Amino acid sequence: MRVGIVGGGVAGLTTAWLLAGTHDVVVLEARGRLGGNVRDADVEIDGAELRIDAGAQHISPELFPRFARLLELLELDGDLIPAPQSFTLAVEGMPRPLVVTPHTRADGWPREIVADGPEGAAFVAFVTRAVELEAQDASWEIPLADVVEAIPATTEQREQLMYAACAALVGCRVEEAPSLSARGATALLARVPPGTAPDEAPLWRNLPGGLGRVVVALADAVPNGDARVGAPVAQIRAEGTGFALRDGAGGAHQVDHVVLALPPLAAAELLDPLAGSGDLVDALRAFRYAPVEIGIHREPLFMPARRAHWSTYNISVHDGWSDVTIWLGPTHGVDLFKSWIANRSVPDDELLAREAFEHLCVTPAAVRARRTIAPRQAQGGISFAGHHLVDVESQESAVASAVEVARRLAPASPRLDALLEGRAVRG
Ligand SMILES: Cc1cc2nc3c(=O)[nH]c(=O)nc-3n(C[C@H](O)[C@H](O)[C@H](O)COP(=O)(O)OP(=O)(O)OC[C@H]3O[C@@H](n4cnc5c(N)ncnc54)[C@H](O)[C@@H]3O)c2cc1C
Image (cartoon, rainbow, N blue to C red; front, top):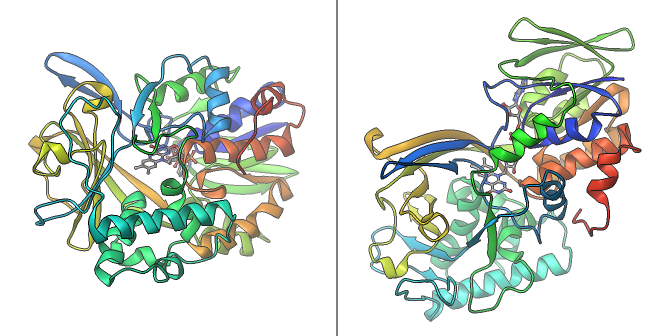
């Protein structure tokens, strides 16, 4: 059959890659480039060109088994850059960060670890609780507030450490963090690649040349290369036994099955006029996103005053927000910074690149919405893929969602078989 895939992010492209060979596929992407939240930035550093990830960047072969296998199958797994995730959390205006965790044993710069005192103890208690929730496979519907308020700590410690750390991971206001799903908000604090020593940072990875290489490899491996950019789908109309998709570039596409691999709020707009989709539309509208803007810069604009307190992942708490700066020095060998700047004022001439995104905030309502969508997969000629459907937003969740679509539409797909072969998989 002919399958129309709406959305050319990692979920849509992986779906196309898995279905191609079994079905005829067309991918329709609204933006001028494929990749969605995977975006390259080309920056010039001292006369040399460097391509870095302006959006999604960090991966873990150990924590992302399906994505790791995809990299292997695309022959991109050979040269991953080690990216230890040391962590600094500082409140703007305070002389010393509240937390500075270890980097590696040979980190190459004189560092001062800050784990002492009541703040260190409160943060350790929080992470320990997050690990317990994960180990117990606690319900994803428990709000973060229920967990945080039960930890012995002061109101200030809860706000500046616990809620701030979780808000930073998604880009919402600190005061919105209590209403996040506790499992969703703490997943990335609780999960550490196996083998991480207590006195070293968890070891994540970066793909040299950026994750855009995955996007290119996936698009190249779709046999007829039918991935169209600048083609925002504006309407889906039931026609005969299939659907007519109309894109904003004037294209019309007749398909037998539609895969909605676009963010849920955009998917809801397309589904709304279709008969019998009311509960799905409501479920898709239950997902919440935070607007995020990322700037790449050379000056350490938002880094701690003392280099001894720098980490690869730095959170600065200010004005009700907690914003991240990723320092690329230890991973990419140049003092280059990637900052969340939507709530900052940064002069344009400081920025080498700037990109806007929407980041998923996993709430208990979103978790319930997933339960409405899951049994409706592939019903009535429509499937759903995307980072919002599985776990927390990541390359792994995008790929895992594509796997679920392929399982229904192309269970005998050789690529599906290869992707799932021989690996334990996180749900
Ligand atoms: C700032 C940021 C940083 C992140 N960092 C990481 C990271 O370090 N590691 C990690 O694993 N994950 C990270 N993520 C998560 C990342 O979003 C996922 O890993 C994954 O890339 C999402 O893929 P997707 O295909 O589900 O969604 P998207 O990437 O959102 O793709 C959806 C696509 O649908 C398109 N679309 C929308 N409307 C229409 C329409 N009407 N017609 C056609 N197309 C349409 C969009 O343009 C987009 O290209 C990050 C996310 C953000 C926002």
